[in-house]
Amino acid sequence: DESRRCIVSSQLTPPQGTAGFCAPDPESGELRCWRCDVCCSPTGPTVHDLGRELGALLRHVASNRDRLGSCGRAQIVETLHGAASMGSGLSKEGWHRLLDEAASEGYLEARCMRGLSFAVYALTPAGRERAEADCAQPFVLDL
Image 1 (tube, one colour):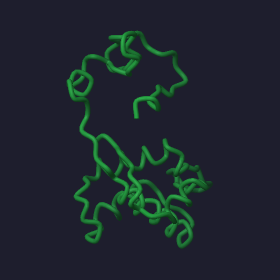
Image 2 (spheres, helix red, strand yellow):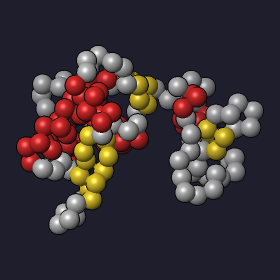
Image 3 (cartoon, rainbow, N blue to C red):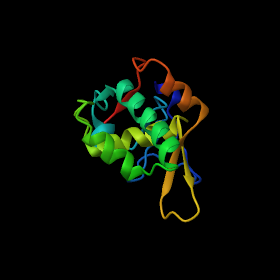
Image 4 (cartoon, rainbow, N blue to C red):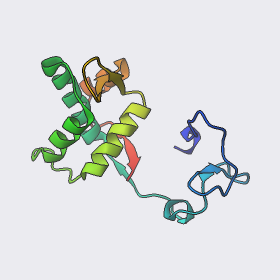
């Protein structure tokens, strides 16, 4: 959804053409760096519906949080990537990308906990609602 794309940063928006940074295109309003394969592709990035995988991720975080008290990034990805029942074929990098986007969309929040050297993830109210809902709801993501 192009209307929801934005740059989130504490830094000033870089000028168009700055290497390594996407900036709003003055003509189309789209975010592009005009240097990478995604920005220069006429069709844009390949997108996948990962609604089923998002549901599994959120349910996993909910169950581990209740059972273990914490759920770290590596543990989430390792477990879901290795789950034979998922059958999604999503790579570890894909699971990391999905985890990041779930946090960005407000389904998860990262928390720092005393005594741990890593962040743990917890469901937000929106994440709990999505985890309990029908997982057929689409969640489109570029990979």
